[in-house]
Length: 403
Image (spheres, rainbow, N blue to C red):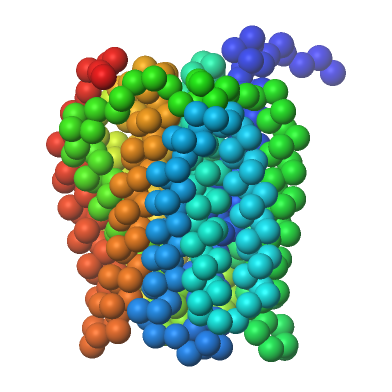
């Protein structure tokens, strides 16, 4: 049978999207497997170790502190090593640290591991974002820069799906500290993903000089966008830390909770295509504003109703949007700075994002330990996200080649 010839544009897009998909596995490791899996692990760990909500939230706070440390160290690393080398080193380290989570039980050891994992994750995720940004500049047509960024950040959804498949059955094993096996399973999955990324990105290289760039970042001109991204980090992480625990408190069955989290991951993967055009079109903070409004609505739904329809609508909407807020921040940098300034810009946005994530889990946990419980904590998170939307809307395009 004769097949119609594919256009040259479509053929050229395939290698770019294939490499973007390989990079997406690094995003799956750095956030999907190492951070967002914690929402599924929190209920069995909390029951086994007798944690308060504040302690449970503090585990994610210390992880975010490590992420901030990694973000601050990253410019130094990128001046000395290529972005791909930094990505792979961080991904291998993350894999090993996840396995190590399954070998300890003390809070102090877990705090240390969450901190070190945060550092490794920052190295992986941010250098991967830089590589995806540069890869997107090579694409055209069906492989637009917006789609390439969406595919990369959508990889986090793949990690969430894998977490939903691994964590519930492993943490339900009839053995002491069964959650140990879940952490080790995540570590092995991360190692496999790292091997695929290393193999498929062998031809993708950004030198240390190119990674570091040579322009200073114009903090003041991006001030509103940075403030909005800080608040997004503060607001969304409360949902991702505690939503599964809330659903268990509302007596949703284990099967439905697993399906909910899997749906969230699938929606995260689909977000690559949902928002690609919007990411490509707007140079200011409009995209970030719209997406923050939608994340706020998704965060509010399970706090208002425990009905399965509301719960699944929340998971689908949250998954379809929250990763694209990260892509929107990267897109804001790409639209408004020359290539030499991308590394500094992405590092700056990552720093404020990490700072927000430090505050968010402990704040929500502190509120949840009060009379209102987790519902009140998520309502507070939704309010923070709404404020983030307002600030992002006020962020205007920045003149190119600012120094």
